[in-house]
Length: 517
Image (cartoon, rainbow, N blue to C red; front, side):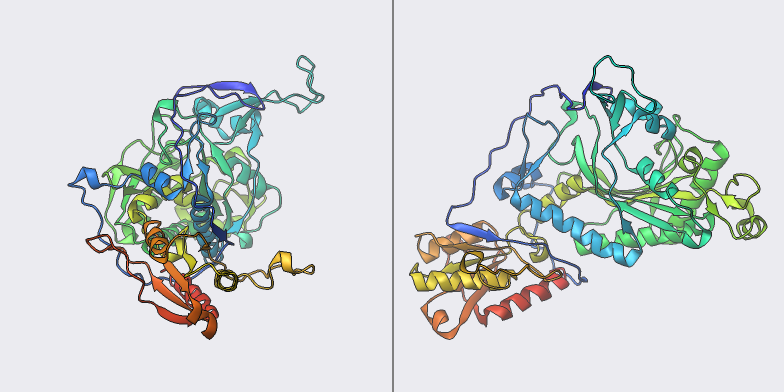
């Protein structure tokens, strides 16, 4: 990965031969109403049977499935930067929403940091010397935009698109005085990252140049390392159970040859991670000399449908960046801190009672794009309702004006939209915060009922809501859940569903989402 790109702030990317994936747009008669959703707790039904690794022809591939499900595509105009379609964006944002719900429980504060920083910051952090070949380097215009002007004090020509968030988070931590009572401080960030991967290694969502990481940094005292790592491992286990993912591997990656800091600090950090892994009660292995240049790490490894291993979550221990950025917190008293921490005292910055915190870098999903690729193959089109890009569709039996109007009203109610349609009222109120909302489409095409239902099944809608004349009279709808097994002859019968009121269907959806079903 030694490809370097330099240019203006509007960076020029060398064209690469990447085939643009075409996607089929949904029928024009199917329209969507969608808004974000929120938190819940697990107890999962079993997944439907999956293809066997022994039969490679049947194995799902996230790139093919993404085309079929209209999730994302790639373009030669921006190699390694997937373009997410509405369906894919719903899944992407639901993953972020899931994490935000957990952040409240685990004590993380979400922040937003810049995408671009001056070269001097990357030199201070150590990334420039050891990582610049994998960064996108861009050039600023100076104070007034002149190409050959003398730059003003503080201006620099070279900047780097951030490949990681840690230097920016260090600046935020340092922006205010911290007491020992404030620690641990936990910052989380979804800002996009850029890494200059060689074009030949780019692949779907698993190897990209622009991606989003559920990146977080925990600034803590040395005495808090063990409890924070234990809590992070618990976070990972809890999250992965919700998605019904296969058992993951724990791997300790130790000091690489290209590292910064004293070996004694590395030994101390590796010992802390070994202690946490032993306390987890899970099997783990060691990957010698594969740690980050600033500290050892615990990597979580998952396999895709092809048996290939991918790193997802990571926990990294760092004593180096706090020293490089001069990060400190006020100790209760140097003597007391030394007594409590014994052999693991932090480096003091003088005799003023200040000490350097330790940074724990952590990600639960890792790259959201890569994690999403694993999920696409894991579910193979049969998304659980709470994560599905096609949660429900309303189908009127016939397209009379009265029945179509009723079907559209059902669509709004079931999707969680309140109030009249915007076109019917000049005093539309803002939709309330906190209300659950769902993806509910409607099919008002002129196709037969059986054809509409057949298409809804092939598009993997979780629920089909049929409304007919009898429903119009009774104010009900007929709901049937997705059937993953189609009859041998391929015929689709009229669904044997449950008659419910539209608000009851909405309540059912809320309950399904709460249970991560």
